[in-house]
Image (cartoon, rainbow, N blue to C red; front, side, top):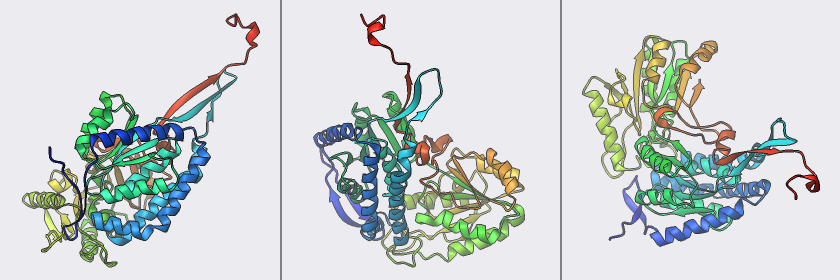
Length: 469
């Protein structure tokens, strides 16, 4: 059978940068065995010693920021300033867990009838990480530092269009002094995932990707009774109430939708605006989007790079066409640039109803849908009328009303007067078809641990114990 190459393609030029031969089944088996042995050693190392390796990884990320950012930009098209920020955030995550994580993993005493009792957080073992291309460093570093600090090993199956990023990440952990194979990158296609999930040396799974892939992988993992964390699709609402600071909300909306060229699960995608301020908001929002420069992502003035793959652009064009065919209006953008590269001029659509493609489906690219609501209650209803539940933003100057509305918003995170973002200090994840489980924060740190109850009764003199004879 022919071996299909794994290609690294520059989406701005469509040039093949590098080609890799996938690891053979024999090589995969050997790598998993090496990782399994490393994980068994790693769990015996004190947590404070493990934290030192996280600090070294952070130092390497900061020292090699320029090279790593350039690699991200070349391999998946992220504007260079955003790629640099991604490296910085990955380093911050390592530093946060190195300093704050050990305390979060300490035994938690619990008062019972025992002489002593506590809750311990033991590592599960080897975790398979199936990761996406859109944040090729951050998606991995969002998961890896807490998982490693907790005493686990990691086998990474990264997206096939970012193989050089995948290898660079493993190299960082290796140079940070982790045991050989503790963090292992496998260059394999999606067809290798079922066997990896079934492998008894793999103890848990984390996946960030589409809802469809997540559902399939979850069924495989459930068949083998392996715990999972799934961070899947999103169609995040950005709710703007009539009393909001409209210029501030519109300016934030540009970044909320267009960061990473709109290729993010937690990008705001549906802009639900009270009718009284809908025109004002849409005009300001569209003006901000129209001012964004599209082009070579290595240029510092460029805010919109190429989409990572041609199919993503094709899907976006189709979603916009299906929406305009039933009444949506393109306020700005919405065209494909001529020439090489998978470029799409960022678009804002208004007169959108919740059933149109750009509102009912996840749009993974620089397209924003503006939906009008008659009042705050209807705005929340529209926000919840989706299969997704990852993040949500609410813009209002009435914080007491915000407090009343937040419990009714169906999402894993709600940001008031701010852009939804992941933060090492806060748990991150979704509900409904956006997945389950949490990354980051104390919850994420303990996600891949055995939460073990320990009950220790009073000591007895063995010679007088009835069973001692």
